[in-house]
Every structure is written in structure tokens, then in C-alpha cells.
Length: 119
Length: 481
Image 1: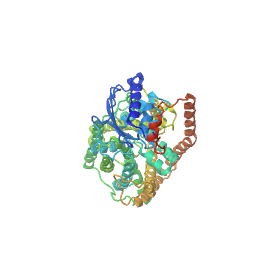
Image 2 (image 1 turned 90 degrees about the vertical axis):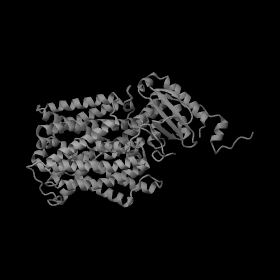
Image 3 (image 1 turned 60 degrees about the horizontal axis):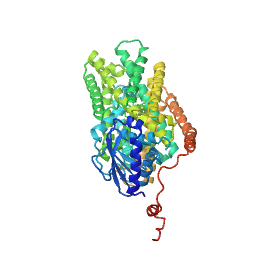
Image 4 (image 1 turned 180 degrees about the horizontal axis):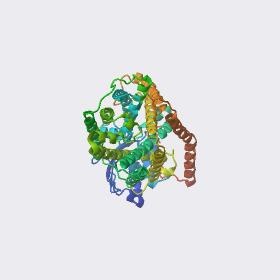
């Protein structure tokens, strides 16, 4: 079980990795979305705001109306944001639950894939 | 873990019943469905095919119930993989899913061929130019996909309802046209009982792919949206197909239909002359929007996910700058172009209908069997529970297996004969899938593991401080101060 401090650290690293990746920024240039995350084991929630492919904020709690809602346990979130696991494998096993369009779900995975192709 | 679909989550963009129903009906109602109706007429004498479609629709309601319950258990785009995997094991699920995905290539190729043939016919061009139209259509669809063009939900909805309504209107005009007649409207099992069963089995093909709407479960406004769509879309397809069949049997001689790849144009011509023919041509081209948009999207994203999971070569997950899995899209387009060329060269378009009908009946039988198994394994609540589910699932497994055999052994070119060709095509496809899953997948996974080991990528996540580790792990005794 990961606490908010660990999640926050993972999110900060993820944000830096995403925003500094030029190929990813170009790929996601038309992607402006609000993502809500729910930790099923700790009930922690947080938001990720993406504007034209740039992550502009990852506040705790839910802000705004979401385009995508992702639910899994806090450890999986931490590993996912550190690039230590393949989100698709977890998703296809039903360990990560997502609400949102298929296209957005793929875009979300594409971020991990572009930053950490070997995860 | 919170199950999606059960919680009250409100998304900015979500799919309601009208859009989900249009998605379901649009995925099912492709240009090849017009040939599906002609295939029913080959086995149901006179106008009795309406009975076959009606019985087929009743059976499809059973399928809708089965998929509604399965979708309630696993409301995700990867649903079919999940519930087949949980019920039958991962390797079987992969084999079935790979085989199932070939139907997408089959439908894309068939639609490209049929639209190309229809365009060539109306423009009075030489037969050879039909393949040029096919190539142009596939090239446009591929380019649009590679650029990341996706039809907006409302466009897809409008297109679907226009296609269905136009087909129904032209059919009604044909039904009330003077000069035709309805022969033997109740004679479904009169000639040969087996022919009646084959007619019903082909009727199932008209609804093929309606269940793919379950892949929108994650964007549905609520858990009941997909269930409603699963029951409403077959009603729309039933009404449209029945009218189309009655219009054809009333006005167009079967001899003219049986070897034509564009029966809808013949109906338009017979009902309204050149205007009707052009109207039906426009409708035929419109069906391609849904087929190419939905088909390329569903199949390419499936291939991407399978490659990311390590079940297909990693190259198939490569993304272009529009975040489109371009290798997967190009592979699909190439496979569709090759298959369309084979159809063009051999003229075996009715074989595609028989193969599609057999595959779909097989999927329905497997879904029913999965529900039967998962009723034992999964006791948790679901938003939809099929009443009499156990008995109906057993019945579905048996009935759809029989129907699968009925179309699998049908000779689409001559309804008085039997042919193992459709079944053989599926057996070969399934054998290739099984061989790949059992031999190819372990190799791909071993290669991926070796590549990762060679890269020796350490975990990026920093080690947890001892106190935090102890607090988060209930098996670790807290340290004394």
C-alpha cells in the first residue's frame, strides 16, 4: 500500500518524463483531457490535467469533470508512474479498471509506451 | 477494486443509449448484409425468408442476454478476452480472439469488394476497374486511419440511421410496387427441413458483430446502456432486413439476385428506376464509413494491445505521430486488399457470407458456454442477470453449434448441395491461430524477456524507507521506539 507522498513523488517524476519527451509532446499535441484516479485500497484520489499533451497539474482530490477515470491499487499506480510495469498487461487482466473512450485509454497507455518502451 | 460500470461516475463525454444502439447496428449492418439476405433466400423458398429472419432475431435476443450478463461482469473493451480467458483459459481465449479478429479483415475486404463492384456497375465501367475502386477505397480508409481520423459519435449515429431508414424506405416502396407477388410466405420448412435450418443460420449472420458494442462499456453513461443497445439494435436490423427481403422477393426474380454482388442496386432499380439505383449506391458507400471506421479501429487497437501485452511481435505496437498503431493499420489494410483481390479473382463472395455466419455462430456458442462456466466461478452481483441463464446457456451452446455446422457445410453457390469449404476455411484459420498461440507466442515472449534482460533496466521506483515499508506491510512487526 503506497501513501500519498509516494504517489506524489511518482507523479512528479512521471510529469517530468512526459513533458520533457519531445516525441510524446508532438504525438499528444491534440490531446487535452482531465483524468481522475482512484486508489481502490487507500481511497486516495487525484487528478491529472493534460493540455495539448502537456501535464499541467496533478493535484490530490478530484477536480473538474473527467474524460477518463482510472481505478487500481496504490502500488500499481506507483509502479505505473515510475514506468516499472506494463499498464496494458494489468488492464487486460482486469487489474486496472478504466472508464473513458477506447481512444483515450490507448493514448494513456501510449504515454507509458513512448517513455518506457521496455516496461 | 471498484468495478467500472457499477459506480456512479460521470464522464465529460459518454455514450448514451441512442449512440450505443447506432454503434451496435452500424457494426452489424454492412454491405455484405445485403448478400446475407440473398443467402437466406437461397434456402428459404419464395418470401418465407422473413420467418427465418424472425426466428434468427429471437435467437439473437438470447445472445444479447448472454453478452449483457458477461459485459456486466467484465465491463471493459477487453471483455471478450477476459471472459473467454476466465472461462476457457488464456490460450484458448487468445486462439479464439485471433480467429474472431479475422472476421474484421473478412468484412473490410468484403465491403471493399462489394462497393467497388457496385460503383463499377453503376458507372458502366469494365469489370477490371472494380479492383481499382477497391484499392482506392482501402487506400482512403488507411490514410484516414493513419492520420488519426475517427468518426465522431454523432456522425456514426446519423450514418447508421440513414442507412437503415433508406434501406427500409426503398424496400417498402418495392413491397407496394405493382407487378410483383409474394410466393409461399410460410413455406420455410416446406421444401426441406434442413434448408429451413440453414436459412435461420444465415439469418444470424445479419446480426454479426452487433455484440462488439460491448467494447464501448467503459464509455457508456451507465451499466444499462450497453444492455439496452444489445437488445434494441437487433430489432432495427430485424425490421430493416425483413423489409429488404420482402421487397426483393416481391419485385426481383431470384435468378437475377443469386449471382449478383449488388442485390440492393437491383432492388433500387426495380422500385424507383435510376433514382433508386443511385440512392442505394449512395447508401452502400455510406455503409463503408461505419465498416472501415469501426473495423480498422477495433482490429488495430486489439493488435496494439496484444503486441503491448507480448502476444504479438512488438513492431505491431509501433505508433506514429498521430498516436496510431501504424504497422497494425498497414497490416490490416494489406490483408484486406489481398483478400479482396482473391474475392475479385474467384468471385467467391457468397463463401465469405458462409464463413462469417459459421464464425459468428461459433462465437455465440462459445459465449454461451463461457456464461455457463462463469455462473459457477463468479458469484458476485452483476447489473444484468439472464433469467433461466443456466438452461438458456446450455441451449445456446447446443443451438449455435448446430447452426455453425449448418452454415459451415453449406454450399453458398448451390443451396441444394453441401460443401465443407466454409468450415474448412475456419478450421485452417483456427489451426493457424492455435499454432501461433502455442508456438509463436512463447517465442515472442522469450524474445521480449531476453531483450529486457539484456537492457538490464533496474526498477526506477526508489526503495521505500524501512519505516514506511513496515507501516505498509501488515506482516512486518513495527519497530520498537
